[in-house]
Image (cartoon, rainbow, N blue to C red; front, side, top):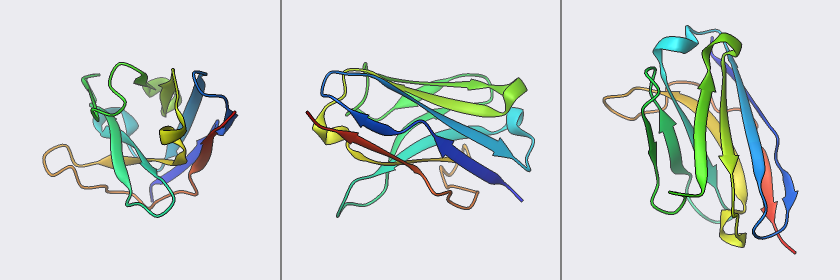
Length: 119
């Protein structure tokens, strides 16, 4: 069974940076596309970034140029480097493994990690 544990969230000032981590287990990590999602209060969960097994990345327009997704297959961990954050980035951030063709999340959702951008 796939297990995903997110960490690294916290309170950050506008314009600051934060690095999120997601440790995965129970799967052959290296062959799957991994994704970061976020859910802001009162809003639906949205896809933020993806990285394929080959390292190809894609981003939502709202974070393009500011966030960077990366993966370490040896550590079965996916990261999200968040730069130039704004209050609009405040949300609970989740990772998941996704089906590359359907973009459907395949694993159970973890507890997420809260990111709050505020001065």
